[in-house]
Length: 287
Length: 253
Image (cartoon, rainbow over all chains, first blue to last red; front, side, top):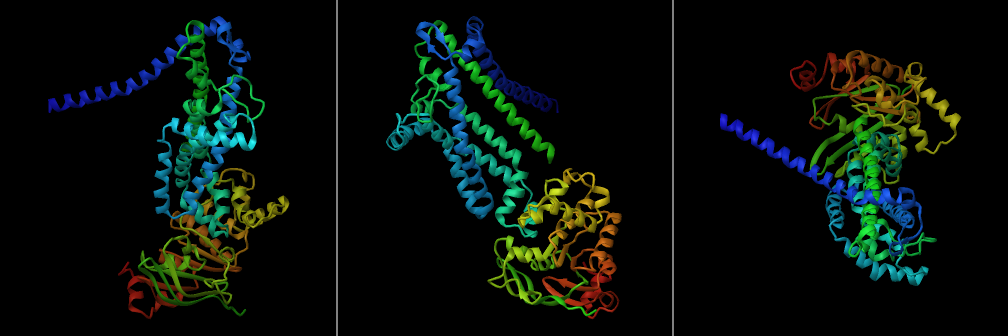
């Protein structure tokens, strides 16, 4: 009896330690980035860092404004493509095909998430960029190319979470609506999507987090020129690309500036995640 | 007042995949009367009532032979318009199932589905329907609240109001009171008796007292067969079939 108790306690402590180690890792990363980035921010000033247009590390100019704008536009473009496509796909899978078809297709879509981002980038460079260059003009490697590739990359996230949200809508709503003479589509957009709204929105926000954070594919297809884009066909450099491209050789203040870029990115993503969990909580409360 | 057959069911068979759920059912249902379907769980009474507005279509693998005529028109005919059938033959479900929308939007739903956009018309009709379901006086100041916040019996009456707004001619009720307490049940029954003046009503019930209280005609079903169908008084006092007698006297089911 006694040894049994001892083992129970042992397991409990072990699990507690493991659980906290994950949290500890997160804390370490946050502290590390802050420690490396803050000295720079105090020296140059947050305002000059965020709103200055010129990024010339050699001559001591560290303005990330063009990259913030690029990150926002690329993410926005990715949402413009990924969100409607993903939600439409989720609606199709849940409401318009027999269950067995959904149970075959959904795992396949989720496999998309397992394809390494460098492969997406590869396809972007070989297929998409030349298409854009010949048909729309510009260098091809562009804001548009990055948005399209990211839009596809976030599909599995949006589809998977939206499908779960739509499946969680009680069937009695569908029956009630159909019994009032509504068609399948009317039922979907007047009742089902409204009932699943908060779940779908949190899926979209999580997809947005992925899009903002994605690095490799974006480096490969966005062209990486540091300037505020005039059109979707211009070459852009995102915050993540900036860090990855220059980390290899940056020293001193330059290196510190890249960490500060990381801090800005970190804050962006934390804001998004807070938003997402607020929506999820709201949904749980409503049930 | 001459009453006529509103629904004529002829040799209706229904299958769920390989399962034969309804066996050769034939019955006529009178307009402006209440017809009750009784029987033990799994006897097919819900299936039968759901086949009167083709709700069974929503279950994959269901198949129907025979005919159901509403006002002489076969609702299973190839050219029948399912949405139209369901607007004419409305349904109230076992568990109140208001949508997660406001009270107003719930009631207005059927009209919006039909494409009505005119605001004042929607308002008038919503008020009319809520009055007909005896909800207007208690809810008129909270039409914008979520329907899910209402107590169950008001939710069920809201579902009835939501149905009345599309002006159906037949109202199917699938155990409409089984989620309600006795007082709420009494209110719904009173409402059903009131609705009888204008509608043909078919009610499925588990509760034999309820069938005896509200219905004019009763059908007793057992394992997919319609055993006996007659005047409610006769079913409950002098049933012709021994199986019906066993059920209503509580020896079975």
